[in-house]
Image (tube, rainbow, N blue to C red; front, side):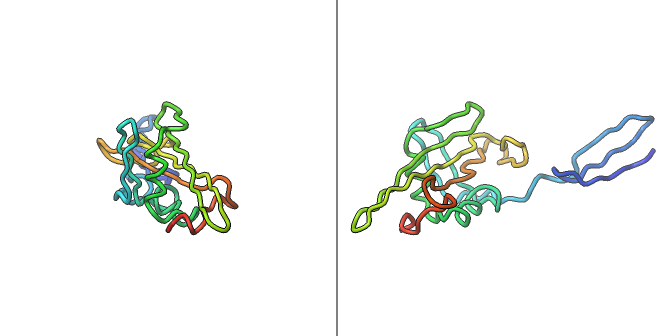
Length: 154
């Protein structure tokens, strides 16, 4: 009997070779991410949408730095409207519009993307039994680098 250990993109795997057959078992969980809910909202169809703290790839920690969304009210404004795009596999997109009035009025279109299922599409992230992944990304469409203007966070 010979054991082989290899590091794969999804974690550490151990394979045992027995008479030419290979048996595999996952030895480590997926990527580290914070499942703590940072924001909570309910859409018009009664879906409870959470924004988890996440990590650099999804959730609050991803879009707050990359897209300058720093307050829950931006997420809430979009989620409280109807679903604008639904792939019927758990991915929901909500559109929102922010309007600045005054001397230099500005209109900004933003999007909130939700994974409304236990796992992300690539199966890397697991929200846990009975939980949903929640908001994976949010950004401003008509802005350079999809970065929202600072006035939206006031």
